[in-house]
Image (cartoon, rainbow, N blue to C red; front, side, top):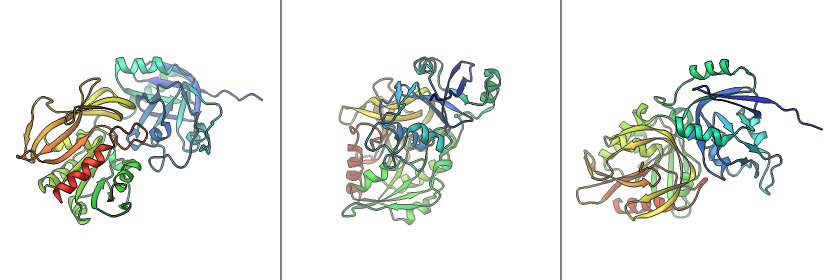
Length: 376
């Protein structure tokens, strides 16, 4: 018995075209084309809300070996707008697998394409930059699909965190003895993040992206946390104002990824769009506080524009760059200290919760606990 080949078409907004086979659901989809360099962890990648409205190209050539399960998702659904792989596994093989990746993509309506030269596509995105893209299993004319791509929304200027946030607040209980209470703003939070805090005795109150300073203060928090999430930080104003209110009250703050970008904007720095971003689980970052290098998990297309060589005086204290990417010197973390040098708040651009990714940066959750201890 032979399986019928379902043709699929991928067209970038500059007209570059790839022909392949359908992978996942039938139909067509549009988004920003980005590439992920992770060799593992595709299930966590697919369910990371930071990928909302992005079409993810996997640079690893063989994807789907371990299938899909109900234990590893990082949120309630797959968020990628589309999925691009070169050589999908024909049969998943893992004791935890419950279904194939292809079946899961189809069940959740995610349109993908396989059998294309993902190395050539990635090199094109590296040279030309991230851009809009369309994938279709119903349109065979590249010119017609290109028209639709050019009519689709751009990532720059998009405020997307509210679209992926929780609708209602919920609590992740502390494991063992409760030590602290933290208000966590869900801008696209991954499930493992409050879990990492829970493991350290923190009761985490996860709040919607639309939460106000009164909502935050209502849980009587010892600290405030902003999660990762999608969209352009320059298009996000409400959460920046909330963070400034919290900093003005000297509420300790820890931010991850999008939370780092919003922290930068709250301190008065600008943000900008990277040419093609950082996405993967193998990015080298130096912690300038300890001078140690860690291999980290990344998923971001924007970065903070802050001076790396000198401190900046802000209305809330003295801000410095705490982490830098060793590949391209992009700002990967910020610290805020008072006049005596005491740490008040900090953030990092990457994902220390290790889902998926290395555990090198797990110490940041311990640093947050230490900050809460010192300000209690």
